[in-house]
Length: 361
Image (cartoon, rainbow, N blue to C red):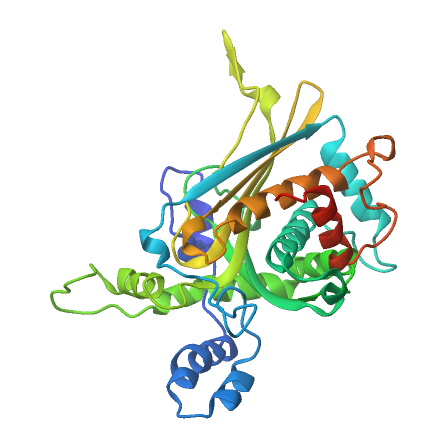
């Protein structure tokens, strides 16, 4: 089917992504999902044993403290919020890439810009959640973050249109962060896993599992089909968010080509409305050049009133905005309170920087 689809793409017909690509998950991947999602929750096991078998659980499903619940209200009934950060400088993106090259491991490729932004988001959210802790406790404070990122597949098959169609896979991973973990160690690790053949296959398997959501027959009362029931039940459950955030990156666009008689595009941004289940935060990134400036548009969305900590969304926005600017600065523009960009700061170091630079966040 894949070969036939590719030969027909020069014509007007658009094919479903599962016709063009093989999303069928491996037996091993499917068995792991069946065990985790269907069998393990129903086994009459002692809580400690069930927790051990399940493995690390991501914030906010796993709270910071056993006495707290990170999500206090059903997100479905909470208003969505979206903040868009527009960051620009003559060498903004170039500086971030050069910084990644400077911290490249002895063997391997430097972290991609996407991996750097993903790790900056990890650092900002880690600091935002750990804010109440004393400075000496940060070094041992650890958290698990499950995150996701769509991977574009348009370049994997010849003849796919530049627009229309939904040709993506969905990569997810769990990251256990402790305050003492160096920033660039995590950025390089994530970049390598995301680019690896195993990571890209895993992303296709994850997307392919959606085909196995069961449908139902009859006249449903609350949902139109099994797909809606699956996601609707999750958003109304006690654990609507099973991941911390997702980063969706459109990459770079050339605004100089977007013009006509009497008009031209000078700025660009993109964002998606927040879904009240799955990821607690959505991060949407777009890069472009304009008027001698390199620019990043970063949209951050969530349901702020769903969290027990009502200031978490705004604090996350402030911290991420500050970190992008700090990491992209040139030596002559570094401020005294900023990190030494030649060093490899830990997540605890970055948190302390943010607390000092933004005491009221």
